[in-house]
Image 1 (cartoon, one colour):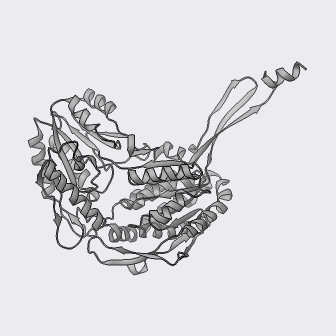
Image 2 (spheres, rainbow, N blue to C red; image 1 turned 180 degrees about the vertical axis):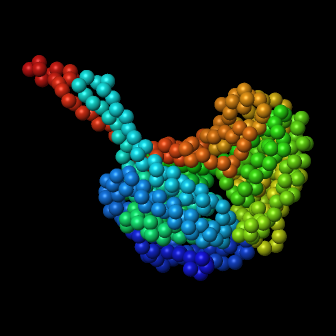
Image 3 (cartoon, rainbow, N blue to C red; image 1 turned 90 degrees about the vertical axis):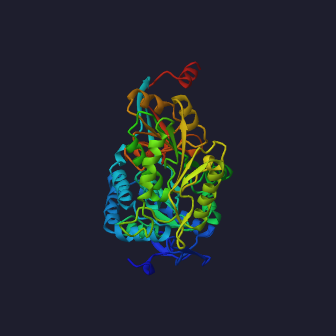
Length: 488
């Protein structure tokens, strides 16, 4: 698929339409810094049109049986795999990666089979009354996805929302909208009714705010920064108290104990921080190593980083592509420089090459916990390696941030692995492993300021349903009403 044929308009009511204000924004290839195309930006009026289409489609879509909603989802999964090469090309051109297409298809396939697991409860514990609870869709859901793994995030939100009977208005990231718009054409091909899925492009203002403040949207799901997540919660409170779920930033620690397989720990933590150019929120960006083995660990880590190939993300030989844009690259270099001043730089820390937004794989050591490089999410190929003396010290430092998305523990001691996992303040823990890893039947999400709610598994279904209790009287049970009327 040539980029000149890439769709750049809005997708509303199963049709591609230009923005009503005829306003566009430019996309640039982060590997070459060359302009790719201009993308239509949605105004608040466009968001209104998308919400109206979704609301009009909701009743018919929600009243279908689960297997009827599953049918176009399963077909969409196959179409995504069919067009994987074109989708990968679009993501590589827009933000420098092309790795998550099969995962996107897998999420749609998983949730297509989960519709009959949207279940309530029943009780006969009240005399002559059958009580049940049921889960029902919210209606129109507003979904806002990030740029770093656009198609995985598209699937994480759209798939569970749809199988539960909701209709959606999704805002793409202004940095990586093209693959989602390509999937929009596949949504139509898969047979989804008009209005079930609507896609708008734009920035936080005005597009994102129009979604977060919209009075007809009852549920919003957002993945992105802590600062933006807080704004969305505030907008929800100021509008209609829509239900909000968030997956936000991370500063994920890995603890490497003295008995760990050092070569394996270095391999997994290295891949975690260099995968996707370090642009994923669960990356082990802080590695805490027992002081007795830190030299061995650093030797292994530096060897692995020396093997990293940087360049064109579409080339099979490339391991690390560019950062998403110049602003992202400059922020990474700023924080790496702070880490160098506050601690010690032993590898990288500079821009790679003269063209493209590439950053060298970077290792900082002995960075104090009050450094901005330690506290802020760098979101790039920069790892901080600090040492500890004992388990208590390791846990204190691991938990010493406001983030709590992912943690790792490397040890051969089973009891210690379980004990430490329980005490780590994060939504997920990897024992002798690091991200990227995924189990579709397990929930993911953050503690503390890393998020609210859980995605994937049955928990991902519950995010997109309201709970209702129904009381069914089948006799003349004792009740306050009967007691009062019988006393007359």
